[in-house]
Image (tube, rainbow, N blue to C red; front, side, top):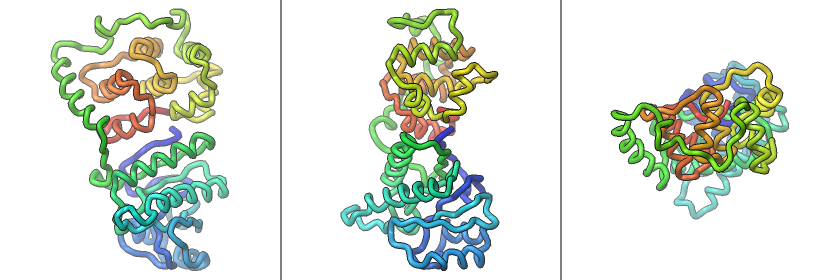
Length: 311
């Protein structure tokens, strides 16, 4: 999975680099900053941090990670929230972008981020989450890296906006239907797509058929599906591969399929969707509303403690 969100302590996440919201001076404060130093070995990490010297807001610089399950700690200074009128948004974007640039320079294959500046800096969590996802989405559009957004507690993850408000009502409505209907492949959903792949095609060939049919490039499809090029090569070349529902669903979004077409693709891989399954209902909600952005879908799935799209 190129991008995923996890609930964890960032000091326990395995990645080539972890990002720390740092103090401008070579010292550490409370919260995540202290936790990172103590887990790495504060004396060693402080010595290396001192070599960097002062960091301005938005800047990022690396040190070794010492006892942490990573190679590097990337230190970045988050902006203090002052109402949003003093360039805080641009500064927070710079924290993420500069940290990613450092990770590229270090040849990192994976990097773990906290929600930068939402602790002692006081940056509002919904806005911080939006900025993090925007920068990560832009970066992964032209780079390949595994990026993990680490949320320490449930209060740190806040979804806002009309889409996320509607999905709760949708779930409640469909949970009533679940008492009488078993699957979403029910009669009313057994619709003929305008044109479906030949019934003889397996799910792998069907994905390639849809790529040609839609006129998309292979790269834009596997990136939108939140899988890396190696996974897509295995799919494309029909190497023995046991697909997961979340991966096939991810390609349904990447290919911008309607519900009938998505059900067809899932069925070719042996999957059905159920009225009583939160993951399945979330997938259907976003397809029905023609919201095909996997980042938005994954935010909702994470909020509901469901598997995320991708591989």
